[in-house]
Length: 372
Image 1 (cartoon, rainbow, N blue to C red):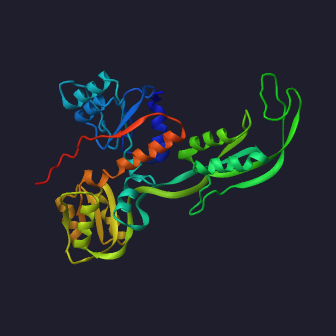
Image 2 (cartoon, rainbow, N blue to C red):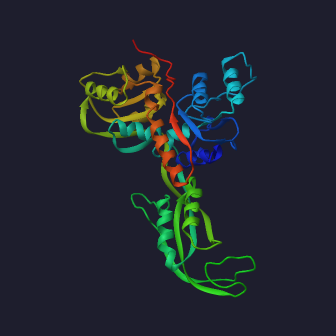
């Protein structure tokens, strides 16, 4: 059975809540109908006419991109111009486009975490903090014989994580009362009679970005027809999120060795670099895409090297003058690592929710640069 686009949007936002996007960004729906039903989605870093044609050829009614197709306000949609031709093609062929951009850069497990992990960095920290994960407290009332099952279900959906500890809950015993009325189909008790039952009040914390997923898991595991639960907003702040990461290599490498490692891991034919080949590399900052402006933050964090893309001439001079080595691995090269990860995440979540959709990685190369 086809899946509504908005159901896939919700899953993407579990991984990368739109609240994490930078204020200048345009993440989210770019074009199309969120209520449209699709059986196939195409994942791509960028959206252009070739990608749109690939989506049509493969029967994908949804394109999920990293870069927004619409970034600056349009004054007109001129079908004779490239942007207008693309929009016209998408609308004519009922293809919806959704972008997860700086929210996917900043999120845990997003672009920068994956880039750092691929380069072998450990002891990661956010390079430029944008905010902190917010929590709600979930309290649900469960009959004693189902408490363990409900607890396992909500923990499995991502609730109850505090630092390096999972399955963090608190349980209190008490007596619940209810009277089933006409039309009810109670798990316990009889229609029209007041029932008393020994219950457990199960409490835990949940990141706001996954609250819908946790509630659905709770409702599925709970035996009651009508589940009593409460959600409380909390002032507790969770882990930081933001652009870039800084971490350490397991052992020091020469800059020359690290350059080869970056080129191999990211499968790039060439790099633009600055620094002495024999110099040591131990603490490294990364920022997928265009992150050269973060070099002062990298230096402040104690990094000796930064890996990013789109480094400008004078910025490169400033980095070297300040003693910071750099590797420009390209905008595309530092971000392409996220697409297979996003594909795997969505496939797993779709299986869990019994959503039947094919998730394909685009084969169209959208990198505008070639190396000779």
